[in-house]
Image (cartoon, rainbow, N blue to C red; front, side):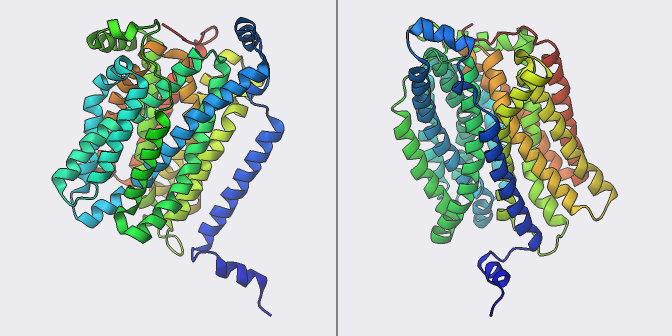
Length: 477
């Protein structure tokens, strides 16, 4: 009679034992996190708050009706966001292998994308605010369909054009959609506290779609070769385009018709003036550049670092990727309970987001210090490095909704698109620097650099936390 354990092992993929253990442990941690969060924490939008009571009195409605409207709005946004992120993950995870099969200059293509993003970032946001966030989301979808179609051609010039367009579309992805959601949330009169629920579910969904994208992209690659995931991305982006068409339009002006009388030049200059004159907005942008720049650099580093350590059985990158994405999902789930803890046990509600961000960046800095020290001083530290990678991905899942909440708190609705794109200018500079560092520096030095970026971000974040006693969320101007 065969051993049940042997039967189970025969069904599982032929991965090394450490990888299977990692996947099982992360799956268990995710299940425990989901259970505990549902049992021990009630989301802010489930409870009636004093701010909500004022809104209910003003709109002459009930908590149930307002909550139903919010759920409908949230589903409308998340349905688009998750489809877009699924498409983005599918083509993003297989772009390197596609370019490798074309035998083209991969570094030049990636660098062109980042430089394009940096060049267009200062101006693109003003266009988003001036001509409408919904229209900008539509432009993003159309650009992505074209870009993924261009990936079908084994021509360096055509691929280079796609990367230039990719720099534009990436800026739109991380500004137009969030700007539309934040402004529409306030336009419909929902309480500010409920924004956190949407940001949290975006982070949770981002990790979940990444896991799904890995499986779906592999299926399409097996069926259609390296171009398969890009065909899938075209289909998904087309679906997102149809869903966006149902949205209402909003602009970077508060008064009705303000976008028509406001010139593009004024939108551009006012956005820059606000960033340079408001130290809080400036610090938010600097923190975003440092933290996301450090994250992108880590993304370039984790695969070659693990491969260079030669663990027993090799490195099944798909398995490790799934585990890292589970860590992002856990971080997204932990966001609201962590903010609740800081607002009730540590400080005040006004400082909760700032302190949560400080905690997240300090943890990320500490996690990246581990490979910086281990790779320099120890030859046998694979487990420690792997755990540190899990921790930083948890921090990414946690800091995503925190950063979104802070942007909605400090950045005025009228300039959301402009300022979010201005923020991407230093971000792209940090990413290009980090990418260059991965080519010329030893691994442990790059991780030391990433740890330093998160540490500086934490220090700047602390200055915001110390000065946020009575800061009110910016809604209009």
